[in-house]
Image 1: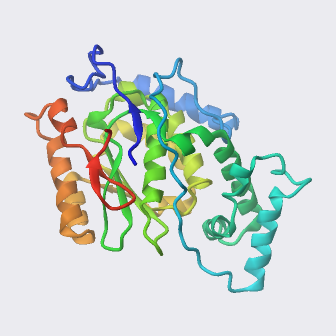
Image 2: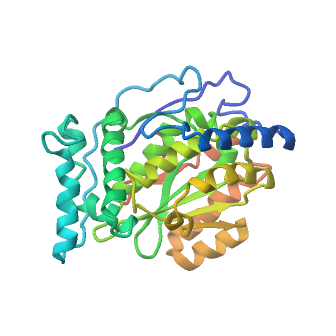
Image 3: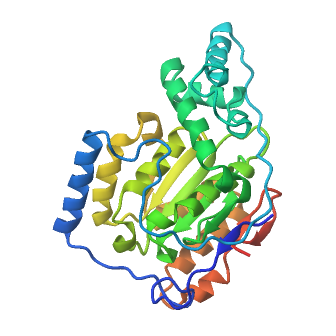
Length: 334
């Protein structure tokens, strides 16, 4: 099926499909002030508690209902030793009566299966205490996002979509900030649905996807608030644990380093090892080496379109396609 999305306001000079999103310069001093303030908040441990969504005023209008999608099926490695089996039981018992997650709905609890436990234990190097904290965060996150997970309703924030797969079959999710319609605080649902769609597309035996953030055309005005990055990081470290093979960041402008420096201390060492910074040329070479020709040529074409000064946003939108869970190429936001 296709995702239901809200159409951006065509009367807006920045967000309409016939206008280019506005890119602005922010003075370095102002940007550094924002970053330093956020770092202070982080040190006070009051920055975006797990499951709490950043507030940014009134959210954009919600689209109509979309068909409920079944959760993606995936295989998990067998529990091959008693120590690991005991750790899995310890985690799953957190849902039992009298335990911290007992009050959650069956919808939330069903996600806490053996496969999820094994991914958490892998992420936490077998540390059951750390795994338990992420287990609780993940199931509470699912409870808080039930509507988003089941309906896939979101306001379209840009061009985020799954556009191919590598030679192993890992889905590749792509977004380019030149096509950003909404501030990052209002585009989180779209980003999360793209994460969910990447999981939907996992073939049997494949557990992870690659995510590509193309920062060409970055609008600093739309991305000054670092809270969405922190919020997405929390979801990636718990609910989506071990679902990311690589995060490839393309053409990161120098000013964006301030946002990176703000969030980077919150990223686990294991996740840091998965992040790659590339130029657009390096990215094209990478995908040509790692993907079948069909996917690599599609990614190269999308990147070229986003860098073509003669191609309007409306013209780019007309080309936006995504790969669905059946492997078919369909209109991305129909």
